[in-house]
Length: 192
Length: 431
Image 1 (tube, one colour):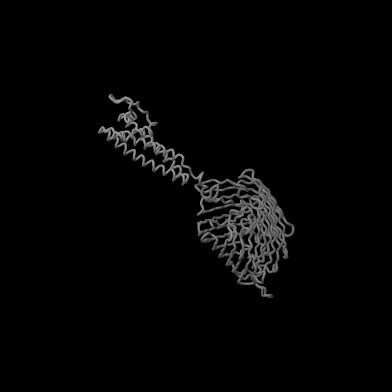
Image 2: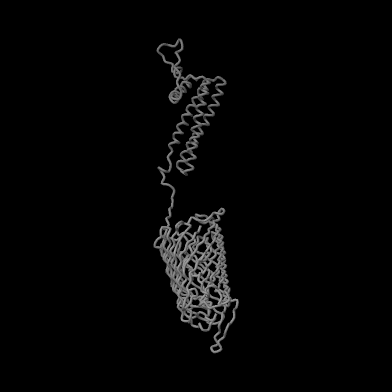
């Protein structure tokens, strides 16, 4: 168990260290042999359960914002009928949603761990949350960088027809309309 | 496909011998008062959704050199013509409001007044010539329908100004209905049209009151978008209300009077664009008047119908038309007349403000068959008609202009030749 905690703490420091402030290292326990180093204690983040819960909520808020942004990008690609960009953004969105689902499961498990004061479990789930949050953030950045047709696709075929303005708009192939004959008749007879 | 039947009413040109030609909207002779600006008019009152009302009134004042179409001692008079009109259609200022249904209702009046104090002119000082028309076209896909009715009346002084001759009056109503069928992509188009025309004259010509029914079938094949070959068959039935022999010459046995006929036209040819700026109508065919009594069309030339017309558009603001036609026409004074006509028209617009129209035609009319007046047997007329108008649109709804009309008939029978000049200054509004 101690070994597991050590690995998780190490990973948390390496991956998520920049996300939250690392607490100062705890002093060595009394009676420890001089000159020896206890990494399992020194590199382990010290957060209270309440702080973990608050931080997890911040993660969810950030991941929700990323999801909304990717959805916006998806709608934009749909409007522009940019199929290449749409495929790329949709792929990122699916991955982000899967990660958010994982985060939700971790959040629920973490809260259960806090309730039963299982420090190891809560630290583990919090670490998962941190990693998932990182992945969602990266997916959001990748979605922003999805390139579309304007760079890689020449565009849909478009046919422009230019009609000579001298060509009459009416249809000259149709038979002429009947016209009313209102001419003055010739003189019928000088006797009239 | 969605083409409305044209309301070929010549507002203001009813008395000037205007002749409409089958191709496009080409009129030869004096052009009536302009219906709208030569440029984009952008006028009309939108009285409802998709219903546009055009209205206007024009006034022409000028001089007529020969009121009675007299051969000798012509009498002239100054005159004025006033022409109000209304037109209601389902359109907007930007174009048709609907593609599947179009209608057009039009009405107008031409009032003419001679200012002469001459006793023989005074009985004919005032003339009222109303005209009206309605057309409806339905459809826009493979099948379309159209109906139209046009009425016009002319009232003019009689020939030679004989006292008591009575006013020369002609009432003409023409109704037509057609079905258009264009299957597939529209390369093949067929039109079936029925036309009914009723002609009613005043007393001096009442013997010529007639009804003409014509059934036409036209089929065309477009091998280019706006060029087609066609066949056209028209069978008519001209029925005179007073169908009778008026007189029989006891010496020759020749009968005089009107006789009904069954004119047949069977033609084929080409219609449409030759180049983007040149269009043509090339028609050749067989004709026969089939008069029930008296001579009918005969011989090779007499049975031949030919129509050649070319339209060239040097620019978007100009158009030149030249054409020739050999045919026959039903005649009021005899059975028929062989008719050989050449004509030309030039229209030029300048900056959408100035509109110039020059046109003229020459017709050789060789009258044949039973004559109403035996003294006119063998009559041949050579008729020249020239029209010129120049209008300046101060606004797109107001114009001023000048016009000139020449009617010159040279006949081999006595007293049937005349020369008539008319000049006008004109002003009007059309909105």
